[in-house]
Length: 360
Image (cartoon, rainbow, N blue to C red; front, side, top):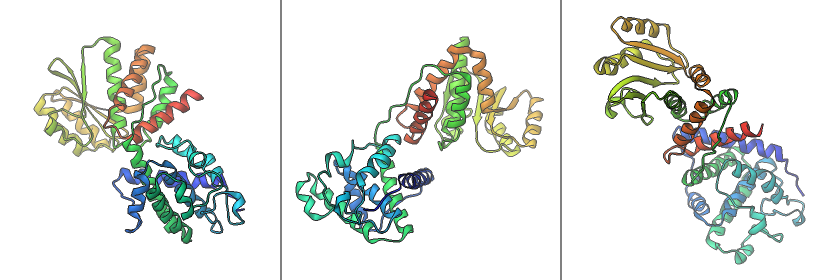
């Protein structure tokens, strides 16, 4: 019997998944070669979740040890057999559940029982026979391949389909009633590392404005717009617009890029001056020296343009609004994350961070 190192398999799975998740965010596509793609499609449209989950384990086993016959998943099936059930229960199934990907309780508990082999003879005892036929095509291809680059490409294509499956499912956003200021600081560090296309920084700032508004009954309305929506097209003054009645109190842009003079000039020309905005904020990680110089020139014209560090500003405000204000902040974040158009990656990342905070 061949032995599988579960830690190595976990590392391979984690590294491949992180790479695929980031690449999908950039619009990269992962496909199998022409004749295999329909079979992969069949696995991910099958009601038998076990097929796709076992294929993932087969790829991990083959990548680790080419002497394994991945069609022999039980240890009593010969020298080339391996313990596929242990690999699934220790690595694959917990991984899918941690990533909040729809999965079974265990393929070797309810489908591939009693020492079956991955061969045509097994087909007769299965409900979805067409799905199993596609499963066999893919497993046999994996068993024939020794090239790690090919196997890794196949692993990534399978993981991409698992991520698509997650995108199609509903993910409940974890709610927490109270977080301390240090916990919120840790939470922000985590969410700002999550690939969100700029959404998380905007959500953090909006939630802070809204908690400030509720804490001091300021009578504000805080609106924000979707990512990649042009301000001019939407009629908004920036990423975030704070109003009292119809009057703009504060307008803000939130960016993870360095703000340079040209960005300040463009914003002034297209939004600040035409709309007569007196207070305009850039929430940034960094602003260039010439951006500060340009902003100072606009101050003499009656327009106060300032640059703020997202995290430092939020922590200062949340220290001021007190326990109840911080509870409002978390509630507003969860409400925004729960919107149906928010990517699952953000929801899963949030849930992981909340679990870490509340279990530590």
